[in-house]
Image 1: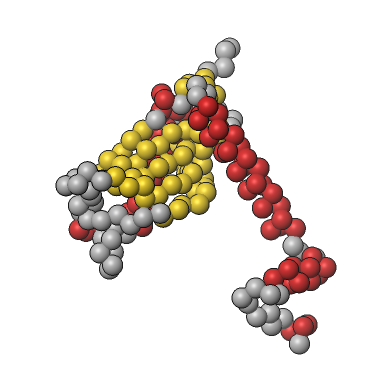
Image 2: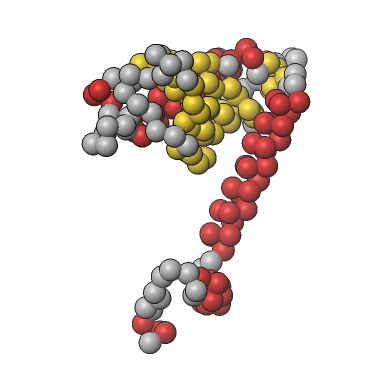
Length: 187
């Protein structure tokens, strides 16, 4: 059987929605939770198109809120599969808002969602490979691969700090940070 591959373009997805007053927070700006919900929706649509299966969100790698979104603006969320593993996909999302009167467009958010395809048996399902057709697509694939490796390293480091010696070393590293260490054995 030949392994299936799909282009990045074949699953790119754009979701556009008008920001209405009920989406605003107490500061009069669009609530970050609304934006996150829309990001999850577009990540699902993009991943499901690529996988040909139901998909679930397994992690969100840093959501950067760059600029506020105003009531009355059109928000567009542009999503593409940047990386694929066996059953997982990293979907890159760029959020931009447009003032319909001035036609000014601003970048408001970026994030990376890791999605996993789920088969009819409710277990992770294999996803097609990714055909990279531009330098930008190669760059994004590599960056997602690199973020995955860094996240694995961060998790190993966080899990490593368990023995009294490792905890003592950690205390020395953070001693000059903005915290007070009041462990009973240090008094």
